[in-house]
Length: 247
Image (cartoon, rainbow, N blue to C red; front, top):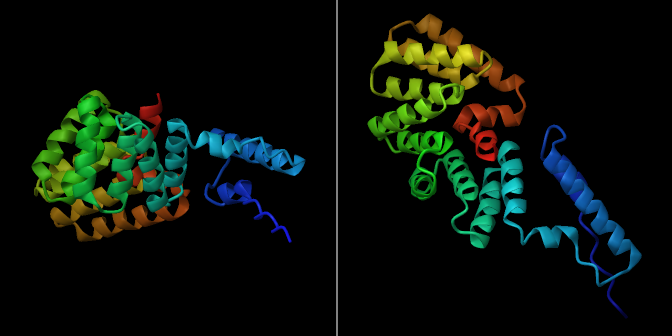
């Protein structure tokens, strides 16, 4: 007896479950899935799955990595970026995305190595420099992180998450007044930045304003709970890099 074919995965439902709102990438995925299902239903074994064809395309994996990153699936995002790098080892966007995913997983040493590789390709990319600063801070190398953030903000001065990260870095170095100024600047650029409010809280604690600090942390928790996952990622590890890298 001939075995029944394996059921087709419902890619549309799987992808819809991973993102909070429609996006151009999701639409492309849905179209590809529907075309693939249509080909299978026609019984034409010679027609390859659209998804299988796309999996040989670096851009396909980068788009997937970004979508998974913004949905908070950092391990799966990392796997997608690794697939892109296997296809094209010097792809800047894939290396940058992998560094961001590693940062999100607190694997800072590995992230630093990948981000250094990306910066050899594009040494003036503000978002790669910001991601490198996150890795350096995670490793306790705060002065080096500050240097990266200074250069990043010279290139892209309106990046609110970078100002938040700089505020956190300055607090780590006990420059609490300057940290507070940086956090306020981040909040001026994005008043709903949970990372900005959190950085402000750390600066206020360092200055001895415990009541004000608790208020700032409350604002951070409220902002984080109210925003979709993709906005949380933006505040967490300079996720604005994705928009900048795609520009």
